[in-house]
Length: 356
Image (cartoon, rainbow, N blue to C red; front, side):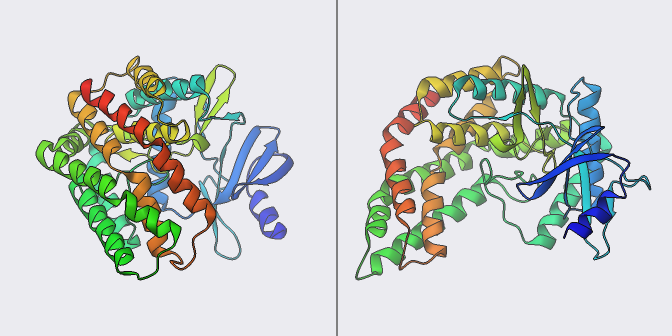
């Protein structure tokens, strides 16, 4: 492996002083600054699009962008002797966003709003990008989910939330039916059954709301017409603090899409980590709106997405697709913790509903 890395590094115009492995990549300290080297699984056209987005951000004064570094042949992608493709890009060390730190998450929300204002794409690129999105989904067979790490990119041409909510609600019913038919049930299964009626009702309500309001369809058309871009992976791993600056990395999932999806994913994950504290949620949304006001359609869609019981669905999905005869105590504890937060979650949702 080291020989392969040396082979790749020799093809780049940097003088390396040290290196170490971090989270599936290699962090390089060079005389020219910090870089990250990792294998690349995307297409060349996808990388070119990502780099155009970063160039647009830089033109708006966003200096610290993890742009790809061209090799000595002037190419962004480098192939090793085994045929593997590698990418080297700028990196910025700092403190990863702490979801338990209210000041940090509010700064991250304010920064996200600025990113959304800056992230725009030329009209002629939109049709090409949407076609590529659909082709990538078809060829890979990937399914898209909503929220944080789950919602990787809110693929704008693949489906609507009605499809999404309906599919997941059917999955919840399937798990419920399966457990009910079991003669002997463990504590995890009993807890899932006990929670089903409450969360399934929320799932159906979310599906009905979107069916009636069509906010996603409207915002999807608006994003396509105006070339609005979303980050697609706005989570704490990709948000770093360097003194007073906030640096966002990993734009590989950035594309034309509904920007509120970035806000939803980061907000939901943060609220889960903090017991759905109303004041924190209000402050986070206010921090975003200090830079970019949400439209009425975005507010309604945000409420609908947060209403859907994502955490409960994940627990059911993990159970059904795993070893049903044995579930770890950690999974059971997560379920109990989720149930323990539900009263606060409902209060937060009621607050959002009043303010729509």
